[in-house]
Length: 207
Length: 228
Image (cartoon, rainbow over all chains, first blue to last red; front, side, top):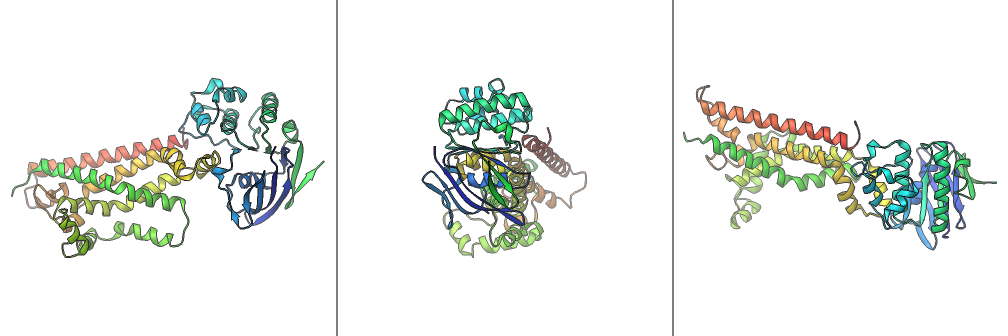
């Protein structure tokens, strides 16, 4: 799997934090209290944070160099799942899954357990359902890297366990590395083998 | 005095519709630019776009006459290709476009600003470049607000008087819209049926536009899930 190599200084309001790590192709879990920089790091990797300074390389592609962004977000082939899902409100669940799909959406809908919701509008979904659709929408485009921002906060425990297990199996089979930001390392343990944590203004590796 | 009430109403409707159509692309482009981009001179550009809102319409008309009159290069060129501006329906549409432009831009800017920019982020992260993201995400989400802008520009064009009188004149059957017809009939007795018809037509069109505008705004809020 492709290695993600990050050396970024992230701007969080008035302060900055340094995120420096290389995944060696592994999936990583990023811990830290809210406001510590987890979401900003994921946005920067997705190419959506213009204030991030530094370098970012995925596989052999330099996504960001000291001279500025070199690869725009729409050419990075990431699957970004933002915290609140951000489903397109003018499209139903099927429309959201198919938005950028490069694969049949039926098995994806099955994987994230939304097959029974395909004709629903986002406003008629629960928080957990929205996140699952957002996850499916990101997977349907066959990303090279999956970025999950607190994905399971809105899901109940039993469902989280089964979806995390199915997702872990899927990304292993498809060889998709994952960067997952969470405050609950235990819930995403099957997904990531390396744990990083924001401590003060630095990102450090744990255990 | 010859004054065809039906023709005046028809002219007003034509000018209103044409003004909202002609203004859509420039107002849409400027509204998007002001809603989504930061650049040097943005404050100046915003102020310039708002000028017709506060300038006396008669002055706007006079400036347009200078720009598009037969003595000006632009006006001479347009007359040469058979499309003269002063004292024609083209002039009336031009006046309505320019005077309504600030409201048009403001409405569209507000409609686009109401669309959470993070939807565009999601679209970009899913591999959709900015131009296609605009058509697939921003425009559909802002659609009711954009339509409200069209309605408002139409309504403003219906009632345009000052600038129209200067650049298009008050020519029966060609540029005498409802507002100019009412002006022409100021000396007529108050119960002149023509005045009553024109006033009623104005009220109906204005109220109808505002009801449509309000409905579109509510649809916009529902579409963006601002209230469900």
